Image (cartoon, rainbow, N blue to C red; front, side, top):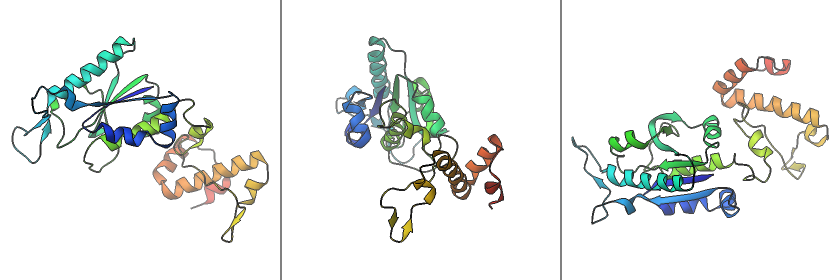
Length: 246
């Protein structure tokens, strides 16, 4: 899968993505990253990509022309390689909140383009022209779209076969089945006077899985009651123990 990122700060994307799991995935060519400098496509002799917004207001607005030409160059590159036109994701409070389900949808794409806004945003005319998906990370304000793009690329990449050393990890993590993940423990068996739950030392796989599911239910009910209620509606059969818990 190839991630194309339209940005004024390519180094911000590359520096973040070249570490840890994402860095190893890039080295193995399981994913590819194409951080494209929007400023390279401006026609302004001073390399300007922004101007004052019509109607007044604070801040500057990214202009339509360099964004449009940058997008055009990426799409042409994709077409030359024989792949279909890619979706364009723009981070905006207008958009659908990013979640695991949307990550799974994006992971099916061969190419995905992220458009990172900056300043006070981007001229609406080019957004109407090229954006296919408005996406939000939540109800808060950031300085630009680079960090949200990195978050989404990380999440989506984990779903690509081979990116995680154990592909089952992506299946059992929080949100994959509509519940938060169960607590996990490692050596030593006792630390600071606290022991690992005995069931995890029993070697009885069925009991371990049952315990993990019950813990996921309890933790989800406590910390994300909205998720718990939705899960219970979709999975009405649960243990009596869980039903009794308040």
